[in-house]
Amino acid sequence: MTMRAMILPRFGGPEVFECREMPMPRCAPDQMRVRVHACGVCGHDLLNRAGHFPHTRLPAVMGHEIAGTVEEVGPLVTRFAPGDRVTTIQRMPCGLCALCRSGRENVCTSGPGFYGEDVSGGYGPYVLATERNTVKLPDAIPLEIACTLSCAIGTGFHALRRAQLTLGDSVVITGASGGVGIHTVKLARLLGLRTIAISSSPDKVERLRAAGADEVVVAPDFQFHKGVRELTGGLGADAVIEIAGRPTFPSSVRALRAAGRMVIVGNVDPGSVALNPAMAILREMDFVGSAHATLADLQKVIALVERGAITPEIADVLPVEDVAEAHRRMEARGTSGRMVLLHGGSG
Image (cartoon, rainbow, N blue to C red; front, side, top):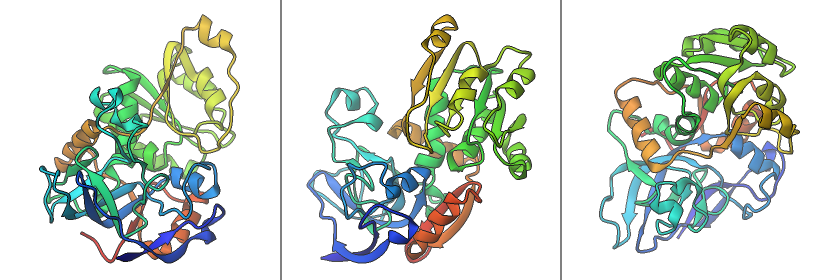
């Protein structure tokens, strides 16, 4: 059996995507086949398409923000059945290693791997999933919304947990108008944090304030630490959620107070950054990596969305065949929120 999928035959620009026949994924005994209704487009996808993750197996079916309906289950699957509406975390973990057993399956390196790189992803009409990376969806959440929950919202949820902040603390969020950034702003408001959003464009200020930012620092040159220090009485912020990475990293370090914590979530411009060890040592700063959501994170995000505590921001919804256009719009940085691709209509 085959399926028609939008594939990445080689690394390059948005124009490289092709629609091709691919083998239909076949379930192992512990797996299920999910018919994809919607798939979000992430900045990570743009980097992958451009060749910054050379371990990606070409030709690749990209897309790790997946929501759909279970179509077939293997004989070892007991908690899901055909017809269940589901969404997944970005990785299929093994379920057996020490990381999985401790609830950190999001960084498991022993399972099938990451959608769109190691295993076929949501730019195709079918994906495989397991009970270890899948959550059932309430009927109240449409599938074109649900596909954004794990990455666009769950990534910030996970990062804020790793920041270990308390009510009233100050947090700087870089890349704040992007898909992950704007939802991290919303989550920070829910946590009662003083939220300082960083944007390179004055056009994004009102939308960030509407999302819950207490302050917005516009920094087209990515130099915002002086503004943050002025807003925090010269001390600096308690934490920075670093979503942009290399462009903003130097200013983010200088925006932190002594004993502050930087949680590094993204890097839109792959490469190394300079860090003077003396600054980290003398000021006892913490630098913490943060990957994507765990299964437990995703379950909590779903509950927040179901009761209306946070509303996902969708920039636009396009047919999956228009994936190149979605990538072009995101690279032009003209979107705020998440681009979503649909397979044959909404769910």
